[in-house]
Image (cartoon, rainbow over all chains, first blue to last red):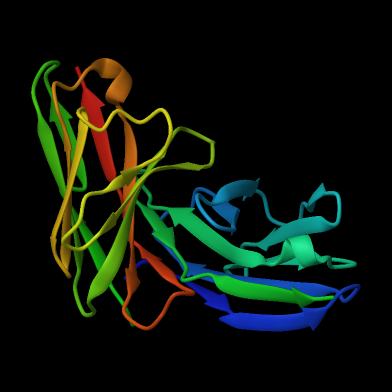
Length: 111
Length: 116
């Protein structure tokens, strides 16, 4: 059964800390893995990963895919209170007709 | 764990027809359900938020008469795309938030709509 699992479910850190969020997946004919940040409303797109070992970076956020381990990590360095959100990982099905989402990691950054 | 299903997973229809998409929470009661639309390689766009037994709250720019949302029970919400046009072709995703758990949304697998 295709699925996506994220860990931890929730995380509380202090400003300036570095966090690593995990996403593991089981899907037939893997195509890509997407990370989203969700604050109050719609999740916003962060990264799409298709190739193993190639880091994608945007400011303090970075992500990398490991196809051997069927997983991805999202790193946030020097966290700020504005990073508080739910981070979602999603993997399209092999046909692209469905998205399998993890339940998300709720990150809270304390000043 | 909490499971949300959507039906159908894929639908092709002719322009001008209406299409109904169902979103069900299978093992929990969903006080709030969200409907999203996703364009290729882009982020999800929240269309509307529906609370059981009350009218849906639509996001700015979303036509409520075109995208009819009904949340008649704690386990079922429906999105009806009325008089569908090719530009309505997209990937529609619902999510559900359960009683007593305001942190987590559980997403359905999505419905691919193609309007010819």
